[in-house]
Image 1: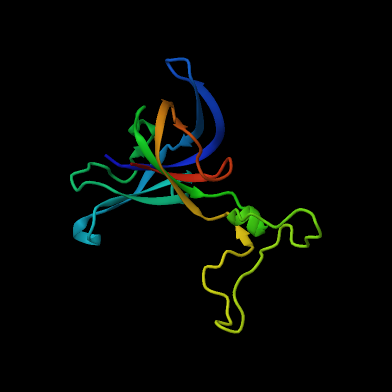
Image 2: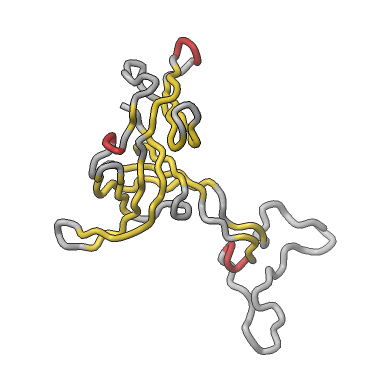
Length: 187
């Protein structure tokens, strides 16, 4: 069976477990996706299916490829729904994190910052970023201010709490804003 699907994040809420505990969940609208292309080992060198979601039949807005077993019976035009998952499954969720724009080192890297009073003039600044004439340069990977967020993030091993129609309820948070597109893969 296919191991993944394309989904849209709808937001967060909470459910109650059978023991009466509150479980924070993220609601995802998964599919229905359609198989757009079938790739075989004989032609491309590996077995996979390309699925599309959102848009007209001929032109899909989102396309993703998932590996499948060679004996898999998926054909072009077949539907892939959230029914491929069940409660208790563990999923890897890949999405684009929320962009936060240009941020300083305190928010971006968690640096401590300087003293708040007693004549200090560097409350939230970077501080020292190097030595003097020798080595005479700023080393690579120095934690400096810059653009934060809006990068591809994978959150691993999120548990499926419930599956309703084409909605998935995953325990915990998922990267990205509401209405953002994410890729779900079995863990």
